[in-house]
Amino acid sequence: MCLGCSPDPIASGSDLRDGMAMLYQRTHSATADELRLAATEIPRAGHEGPLESFPGDLDALTEALRAAGSALAMSGVRVVPAAESHDQGVCRRYQRAAVVWPTDPPPSHERFAAALAQLHDAAAATRLAARRCDEARQTVEALLRSSDHAGSA
Image (cartoon, rainbow, N blue to C red):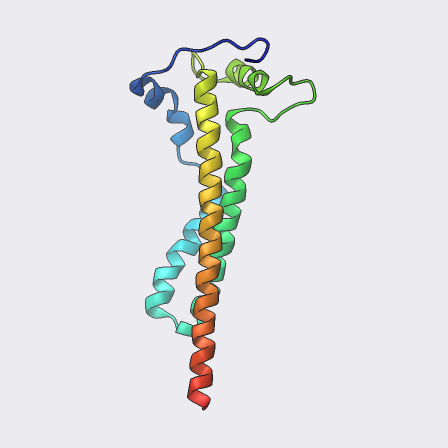
C-alpha cells in the first residue's frame, strides 16, 4: 500500500449507484455528436444510398469510433487527475480527486480505480470496434471490386 493510503470500506451496490451517477451523465461533446451522426448515417445509407457509397459511410463511422476511443482514453482525468511529477503513486491522484469531488463523502480509492478501469475498458472496446468497422469496410470494398471484375469479364 502506498504511503498515505488507507484501505477504504467496500461500498454496497446502492452506494455505488448513487456515488457513480456523475460518471453516467450524458455529455454533449463534439466526439459524441460525430459518433451519433456517423452511426445514424449507416442505416440510412444502407437502405437509401448507392452501395458504392457504403465503404465511405463505414470509413466515416470508423473515424468517429477512433475519435470516441481517444476521447474515452483521455476522459479518465475528469474523474482522477493526471499524474504530476510530485505524485508518489496513484493513491496521491485519488486523494487529489477526493478533495475536489462534488459529493460528500467522496468515493473510495477502490471506486476511483473501478471508474478508471471501466473508462479504460470502454476505450479499448471502442478502438476494437473501429478496427472491426475498418475491416468490414475493406471487405465490402473487395466485394465491390470483385463484382466490377466479374462484370467486365
